[in-house]
Length: 147
Length: 147
Length: 80
Length: 80
Image 1 (cartoon, rainbow over the protein chains, first blue to last red):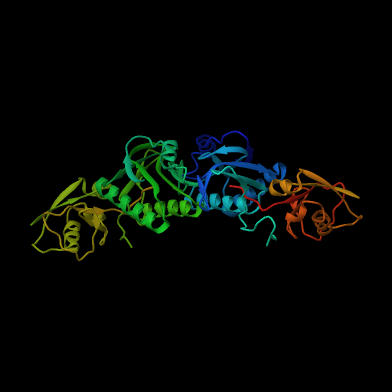
Image 2 (cartoon, one colour):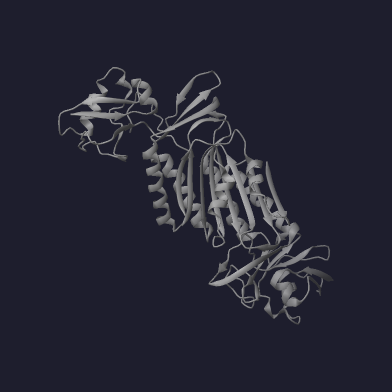
């Protein structure tokens, strides 16, 4: 039970927990990313997510397959939200279940780190002063070169 | 918002997620332990948890304080269930929220590892053949010496 | 002096009770208490050096006990 | 040959569109395509070596492109 998806509707986290739960698994790990009210000292009012959707879903599947192989996990779900999100809304959720805790936690962490590194999804922050800006985690401005 | 508790009622995981969620936190990490249907090749039908309750709650608080200091986390909840649990029921839940993901995940992992190492809680597995046995994670039998 | 010792889980099962009174000379330490306990009927299952808590904190084997202390013998923990 | 290039997020904003056609000699590589793109009006914000995907996979700068490929320029990703 390995599933990657993109959703334009709110992510139902309890439903994802139920989805991976199994009586053969004693450990369940969840990571949830939400829209935060500030970033780099600026007051944030909302976030807008967009993606190169077919490639994003493809990369998400590749990451889950790598996580499943590396950490021997068979129950793993990754869902990323797109569209306009309000403060506190869930942008990404990852759940992993395994007989043992280390594998469940390692798989969850692997997936969020790789997602942030290579899945073609972008977000634009909306600020309290009415401006908005694409987030660039490389720290580069749009005019600089990607390292 | 740091809370440790022991519960004889089922643990409401979605309620715990809501409890630590905050608009200042972009990352939420959860670990859940559940009763597994087998252990060491034996078929398990249920689990019974007992504790030295005042000391267990005290140690749980100490662990949360250590996690909060080590990982700079201010929103952290740990609940452990006691009593007779059916397969799949939640025995322990840990939730941590933080502005950033590494701290939330590190805090969660620290708490489950330390809980298993030093909180005076015990469990007795009930097996399909009608027998039951206290679980000894040290691998020692009751007649052997604790290392 | 008489020390009341709390027992849990497999240790409570081994001794058939949840607590037990142990007579010890004044100034006795955790190690003396464990030795006295292990001499009791049914207590052969106790390891030579079990974990011991005094007043809800893990104690060293040379810690001195007093009748006002809450003393507990802690079987290998198995939370989670 | 004409290559249609998909644009996203800040790059789509910079060029004011979601895709753009680029004329290139046959046998051109990703690097040639990026150079041609950067010469267009508004494309000064593109870095010299952006991430490029061919058919939904990240491609090297020396990978050859063909008109049958789906080509996309990928701004710094920011999922999560």
